[in-house]
Length: 314
Length: 289
View 1 (cartoon, each protein chain N blue to C red):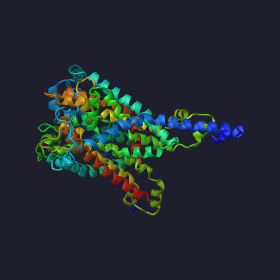
View 2 (cartoon, helix red, strand yellow; view 1 turned 90 degrees about the vertical axis):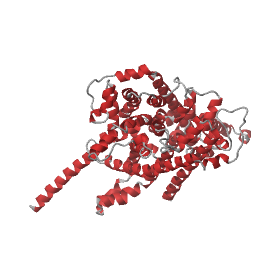
View 3 (tube, rainbow over the protein chains, first blue to last red; view 1 turned 180 degrees about the vertical axis):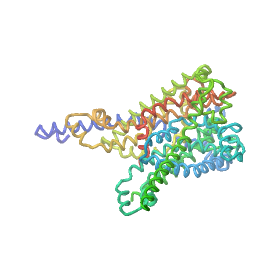
View 4 (cartoon, each protein chain N blue to C red; view 1 turned 120 degrees about the horizontal axis):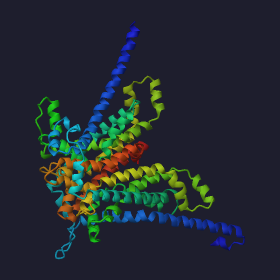
């Protein structure tokens, strides 16, 4: 504005076009941001806030006009924390994490180390190890349910063969003791290739000079792994451990296809429980409470990652 | 003499070490391949009795006997498989296409433009990455139910277009592109929209490929949400159809394997052709946040 009043024409035009440019930039920025922002507000932020609100009410999916939705304070939370099925679900998620996270992480690292070697045909093995990742989880569950068939299934026959007949056929998915381990096994089979690639990227990021220097210093293979590879993979490992832990808490698809939480709740998980309460029983209020507790767990796990990585950066 | 023996010994050791390595690699390959081979081989066995009697031994991995596509034809005859395949392809491709455009546009304005509030928006996006979809599905179900979106395509498309994680991947890539390019373009009179289209997008093929592959995989595999929002067959995607087909009695394993094979093939073929991109996109998802 002030500029336009000055007597010389040149800065006038210049500042005018600069201003126009600036205005256009801001306009473009908002226009470019709008679609995604609107979608995020509608389909992530709004339902997230609603989950908080619903968790304090007795909201149902199909509202009954005679019984209006009421604010019931923390009653849902109180009920949830005395719900045995919920404890079973959370416990199972922890169990899954405690078993699968170390196993899958170590397995992924082993695979990454193997395919990081200069060997003829190694890319073929990389392709094969990764291929389960591109198989849809529903399909994985269906195929493995055949392999885990209680009577004549391939796994039972295989175990009998390698144990010279001493392992009797197991009920697997129909047995409360073995159903969850069976689900763990097929989950690792499907997911480990993904982490293998992340470890492989991490391995290839390690500067070659480090290895050369250690060779000059006379470090052997084991020492190089212990003092270079492992410390250099620290961030990658934290990332893999945290994401696998979060996935362990999201466990749903394979369980729903195979056991729907049974037998006797032995494969019940938080999300299966949430689905049953919210969708089957139409209890939106109670299911939202489960959703919030689930979110808090995921939040705590994610915060762990940020704390670990921050320490590393310092 | 002594020396010579040492040499042959280490040579022998090398050979054995090499074959031990390959032995391990092959055992692991068998572990990852056997369910997939089993699925494809069983799907080709026309005789259901043979499928069942072969499933308990190694013959399950050998295509022999009455081989053909009868199970595949059965799948098409017994249900509208073409419909489910179309639904999955349609939902996945529209969501991913819109996702690539909108997510990259938001990332562009955050990474390359200047406007008030962008720092706040960026931190909100990063915070939103933590919210898992599972914790919002129940209220979202109520919302879409209110507006009558149950059993539709839009209900399976709109909620998944904008993804904080992908916005962040784009953002990280865009912020690394040298500024000199845009400055030169601005001098030549390019608008921000032109810079996005002519400079940023062409320079960012790797990140577009990564998001394309990751989002396609996630969308193709989506199960929980369509299970909640599709009732009839019309809008049902493959994953839900597979699960329902699997739950039907009596189970016909030949047909189930044919169905499973047809769900698996599109992604498996794409993977074999574009392996490098798949591997790279997965590796890029591990960027230390």
